[in-house]
Amino acid sequence: MPYSRGSALENSVGIVGLGKVGKSLAYNFIKRGFRVYASTHKPLSVDSKNKLSGIEIVSTEEIPTHTKIVFLAVEDHKIEEAFYEMKDGLTGGHLVIVLSGAFDIKKLMVEGPCIVRAHPVRAFKEDEFSDIGNTIFVIEGTYGLDLLKEVIECLNCRYIEFKGDFRLYHASLVFVSNFIFSLYKEGEEMLTEAGFTDENTIKEILITLMKNAVENIEKADIFGLTGPVERNDTETVLSHLEAIKNEDTRLLYALLSLKLLDIAKKKYPCNNYREIEAILRGAMWKKE
Amino acid sequence: MPYSRGSALENSVGIVGLGKVGKSLAYNFIKRGFRVYASTHKPLSVDSKNKLSGIEIVSTEEIPTHTKIVFLAVEDHKIEEAFYEMKDGLTGGHLVIVLSGAFDIKKLMVEGPCIVRAHPVRAFKEDEFSDIGNTIFVIEGTYGLDLLKEVIECLNCRYIEFKGDFRLYHASLVFVSNFIFSLYKEGEEMLTEAGFTDENTIKEILITLMKNAVENIEKADIFGLTGPVERNDTETVLSHLEAIKNEDTRLLYALLSLKLLDIAKKKYPCNNYREIEAILRGAMWKKE
Image (cartoon, rainbow over the protein chains, first blue to last red):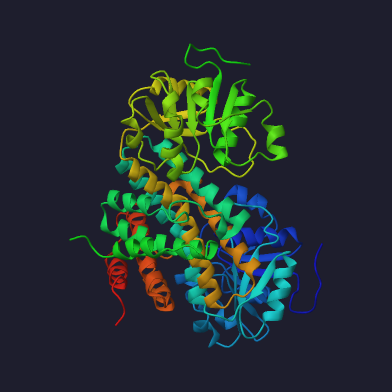
């Protein structure tokens, strides 16, 4: 059922780029009765066309003539180009929404119309035509935030207004998403070096434990931590440091363990962690 | 239905320690028709007693008089003590199974009877009375391995015989389980520093992305990697390094990113990563 919340939000949106995010947004807006005008360089697959029935494919330049709300759903390095393609058509009444979490929107804000950021906190899979309701959008902007909030509410999603350091925000997301891959890669290499040969076994071991760990944090917060650092087990930590031959990996082990020590200290404030801390700090120096 | 596979496996097992792992094993053996003799320092809760109906609580010393198969399900630093408590009752026909992944079983192997390791690759939750079928046990030992395999098969579980470096094996598990907590803690601190104030929001953002990341690895292997390093985006990497003020965190960011670079190089072997690599290596030196 179409929404009717005022003049700017005329039940239509524009989307520049129909990649994973663009397609998902298009699907969700169409489902909610919006007209969707989108530009894309790649032709849509038959399946996508069926799922996005009613979508109007236009040029990027044309989008502002059809709708006041425009999402920029292209890769970071293509955002400026996309913006300048439609710039001549933009008026003070338009709202341009950057979906990137890293792109510095101030670069565009100097151009006049309302430029805002709405960074969805979730990964989008290829051809994921499903409801994105309840997704959190971290939003930033000077003008046009009220309209942006309305748009997000139309998707039954939530928003968090954020005025802080977006670089730090984005770096933190790298820690809990990309760097999971770093740990996996380290684990994979160490199991191989330790003597495991079957790829499927290695993957099963690693994935099982990663899932367990995330579930534990979800359930018990950081206090769900177990393992040698948590139980102040210097002997095991020493044996690990001895077994790890690669300098970078040992440094990584020490740094990540020192972080666990922060958790252990909170969990058991009366324990004495001086020895384990000295061992870990010592391991940060290269071996002779 | 009781198993009957020969003389040693007389459909009974002993378990020293009824913590998370001990209780889960007891439950699974009872369910499969075994008599279970267990020793514990803590009295069982009413619920545990109901779930472990039929279990016989005896002293550690007594266990070898009742059964030939004994699991040591106590904490690492209590394994030797538990072993020596029952040592006088052990014969060449007994099999003592250490469940720890880190404890050096050679310490006990000098004592004569069959000492083996069976390290379950999974986290056990408190009072998790459920089937552990299909769990992988990483096993190690000189004598008694055939009997151990029989015992594991009785639980409908699998085993991987491993003769390699157990310290490295265990260290690799620390990377994919404990260190997930390190990343979470870093993420939490950075979001707080960036300006986020609501604890529940922070947790939701971090957990959502962690789950996404593990799912991506499960589905697409390490090639599911996204983010600035994967797309050779030096500008974003530089902005992150600039935003991170803590020395240890910046060093961590650099090391974990270098690991991602290994993945990126495999994914796109023709790309030139010299600039991003120089930036990351440079970030490993302290700021003036």
